[in-house]
Length: 136
Image 1: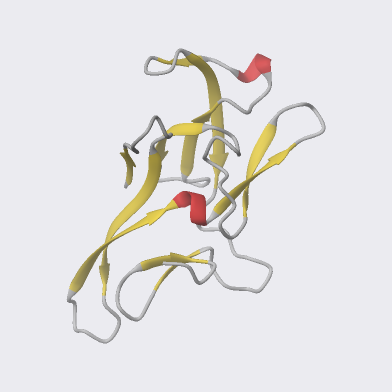
Image 2: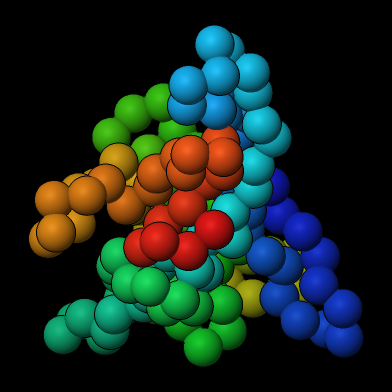
């Protein structure tokens, strides 16, 4: 599940991946965990003037310095993350965020992606916490 958490001082909402994770070796005990997706994803400008989310440690891809994304949702498909982002091309903007009056467009990403190291992007630690790139 993705949860938006409001930030203070006019900052953009954080987009958090949340889950009840089984603690490895605990015979089924679960730990609630949340992971700020800005720790996992960066934003790369594309040659056509738009942009895309990329796996990048502490990349800030959803923040104002990245794609300015909000309203992220987890999907039961592949790719499994959809966000509305202001950093897309003009012709991709189909949604107006009522809170900011900013035009945005959908961007997809697969959180099940495997990194070049062979490790999955999103992992569950030995304590049952969500992590990416070794960051909890």
